[in-house]
Amino acid sequence: MWSRFLPLWESGFFIQRSGKDDGLVKGPLAVVGRYLPVIGLVVALLAVWEAAVRHFAVPKYVLPAPSAIAAALHGALPVLLKVHTPVTLAEAGLGLLMALIAGIASGTVVHSSAWARRTLYPLLVVSQTVPVIVLAPLLVIWFGYGMLPKLLVVTIACFFPIAVAVVDGLDGAHRGMLKLLRSMGASGWQQFVMVKVPAAMGSLFTGLRVAATYAVMAAVIAEWIGGDAGLGVYIVRSANSFRTEQVFAGIVLVTVYSIAMFLLVGLVRRWVLPWEAHLRAAGEAVKSIPVSSAKSQERSR
Image (cartoon, rainbow, N blue to C red; front, side, top):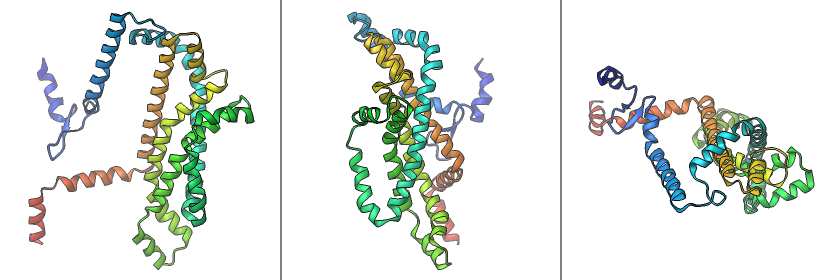
């Protein structure tokens, strides 16, 4: 029976090794194999959790079993997807977009102005010492219970990693390329567009990926303060009703959406920066060349 799968195995459908024979690299199921240890650990922890709750007869309102959480999630899924999820994702997405615009603008200003680097940059760092959950009630007082204060909470939470990434990316532009363009008579704007912006794109997406993991969490925190729909509202109402299994169900969805946004930023990065994959492949190809063969090629030259 297994002989029918042998051609697929040999073709690398399941796994495919690199030239260095250093492990799994390609294949549709290679991703699953890469994360098997994590999956196994999570399954083991859930099994221990389930067994402990059943053995010690822990009340459901204190700590529900994973099976009870799964049942609560299955029962509330239609309401969560139709009523609460669109609100939270809209707040997270729009707030992240606002943070992206503000982070790019402020990072560019800090990079371009020595005065801004001495004055604005320290204020950006100090602003991160104030917890977002402390600012949320003030924003509700100032702007009401609409979507605006929630968008501001998400923007504040996601703004800093993007701004820092932009500053670091622009500062890390290749000095030799800048000198070359200056020697060719390029203006400051041409140097910025042709060298600094491409150099900062990778760093920008790194900061955006970090910020994307904060977006859903910040939207949920904002909904705790005030709102009539959203995953944060659902979690608070469930906690007030001592429906702890529903609280965990909401947490599961928040985690799933945060991971999804993280992966989505990675996909956008591959689409916007396609050359990174080619550079990585070229680097791996160079590393795979044995040192002895490289030396022999140099001698032949």
